[in-house]
Image (cartoon, rainbow, N blue to C red; front, top):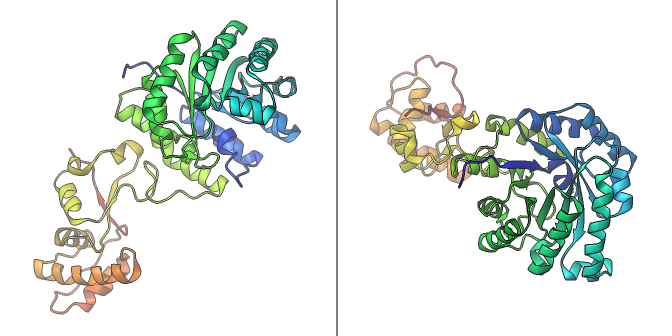
Length: 394
């Protein structure tokens, strides 16, 4: 992939909040917006003005902070939503219109000619507000490809800056995504933004492929929040761009942990321990062969460097641990074990894991040690963390 910067437009405060049952209050929205801006996220979609006065007040409050990020608001492609968006302090407005025949006919009772005429009329009026205009093509993945190009060409003639390709139902795979986005990029001289949903678990993959196809902007949400199965996750997309493709975004990934916790708390949606990049357990190891390899050289089992994220590898003891990990863990506690003692303790640790379905705590490890016969007296122990930390050394 080429090295030009990819523009992340994070929509945690709009599409992320559309997760069923999620509602951010004003304080939470301000905190999330400030955290994203501090991390270097260049654009944020921060709300839907037509929802009412309270939503507009929050949008205006975010705009009043004069964050370094460009701010976008969302609305339908109609006069009422455009009027609501006017004067709220946003730099861009995304005006969305269905482009698939099924949504035009069965949701709006309209046809293709109506859609084209509406885009031409409303985009022109939107430019009078002083905001840049993004035309959001809802359900673009089910639209007739030729009609989608007709809408894009109309948006360009009307003066729009950007077109958003929305895989609204998350039905595309990476191959289809590449073909659709490349065709759009080749046909118009507009910024092209990818908006992927995760119904088949492909949102991040489709987002990365859209960039390969020429998309200049992509939508993300923190922790992959969003309607149904969610959207492309900010942390996954950015880390993949940086590490797999050497594509800069200008975003400080060391802040992802704190941002993830902030959004998880505000949304009431806890992050799964094995969630990629930000999950509590993604840099935690138990299996003996992995631990042995990490102790010798972290590059043996290091795909994502936790140090880049301000984190470190951890080792916990459990059913799949080996004697080397037991020896190292007790050494970390100030106790030297021989192989026989390590083997005895390993059997006890595996029994504990089968019974409790979790790793033993430091106190439990010491209890196991005391239960084991024929050991030297326990030396005074320094205060150490519950789990062994593996330093990221070359």
